[in-house]
Length: 244
Image (cartoon, rainbow, N blue to C red; front, side, top):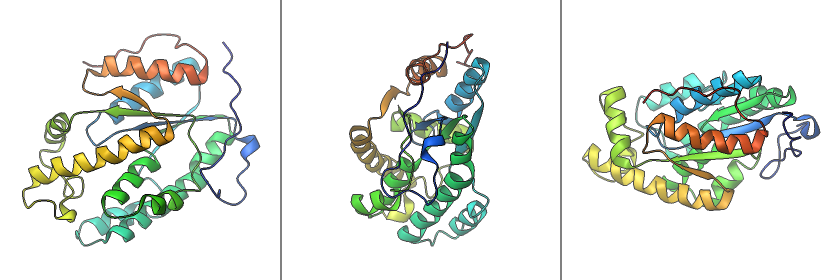
């Protein structure tokens, strides 16, 4: 079955100079959600699924640019970054990936699978005090995805998965820099609540497809596959076996 012809890509506002919009024949699919929501598992399953169908897939995410990814990691170690500096660091990282990885892949006709996109960056910036309109303008050069799936997951489950994977709670992912609480557990839940408020707003504003992330990877993937099928217009050639 031949995939439907994609509409011309466009940005949220002023695009990067020289973007060949009419030649961006690939599709941009975003999987969003909090840390521990199952994004990484879902992206791996979805990539396998798409490649079985014959699609070329390029995988991207946060802090993966050659320009500043290492600098972001290094700067965060001291726990002294201001909220504006942190937001601008991530914006540079995203812009570098957009120009040098996402746009070329779309021009080549590939499916770009993004493990988080500007929405996480906007939510974090707004929670840390940035006005929504400032966050909008900061990322106005971003391309509009063809599909954004949001894995909606309870904070209690996010906490359990964080400990199962890392054995502790990350300083920044717990919002400790915001002074919400001296207790990292309490700060984590308060921070997640604030992030959820922003994701709820963006889900309405940008038309996310919300998927219940509290279930097994198999159940989550079934819902995501249906959403992706609606965009690509082709059924998977064989089922993907997710780990329970």
